[in-house]
Length: 197
Image (cartoon, rainbow, N blue to C red; front, side, top):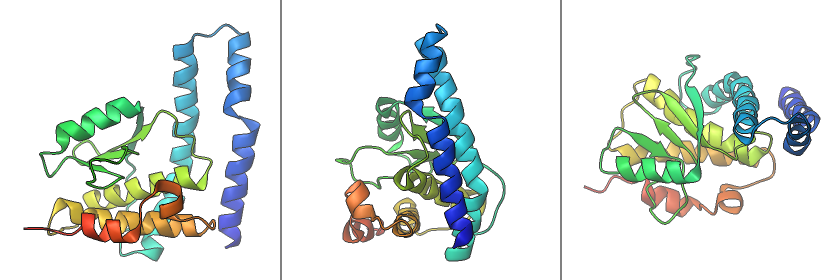
C-alpha cells in the first residue's frame, strides 16, 4: 500500500512540476511551433506511460491471472478522430484492435491496442497523471499481456471482460469506479464480452 502511495505521489509531483499549461507557456515564449509543442507533450506523456508500465504489469500479474511479461508494448498517440477511424476500419476483423470501450459502437473510442504491432494507441489528450488516465493504460496492458502471453479466448470480445475488470479494480484503489469515470457498468461489460454464436 505504501508503494502505491509513493507511486501516486511521485506521479502527482512530476505532473505538477511539469504541468501542460506551464510547459506550453514556456515553449511559447521561446517561439517553438505548435507541432513541436505537441511532439514534446507527447514525449512527456510517453515517458510517463513508460514509467508506469512495469508497476502496472506487476500489479496485473499479482491481482489477475496474467503473466508477468516484461516485454513492453510500443506506446503511441493519435487524435480521437484517428482512433475512431482505426476502430471502424478494423471492426470486421477479429484479430486487430481491441478498443477500451468494448464493442459498443455508440461509445467514444478511448484507446486501442494493435495485436500485430504490439502497440497501444492513446488519445492525444492522455496525460497519465489521473487515475482515470492510468486505468486506460491498465486496460490496454491487459490486452498486451493477453496477446504476448498467447492467451486463448472463445471469441475476440471475451478479452474485454478481464480488461474492464482490471480497469475497474485500478480505479477502485482511488475511490473511483468505471461507471462514474467512463459510463461503463458491469452489466454492459458482461453482455458486450459474451460470445454470441
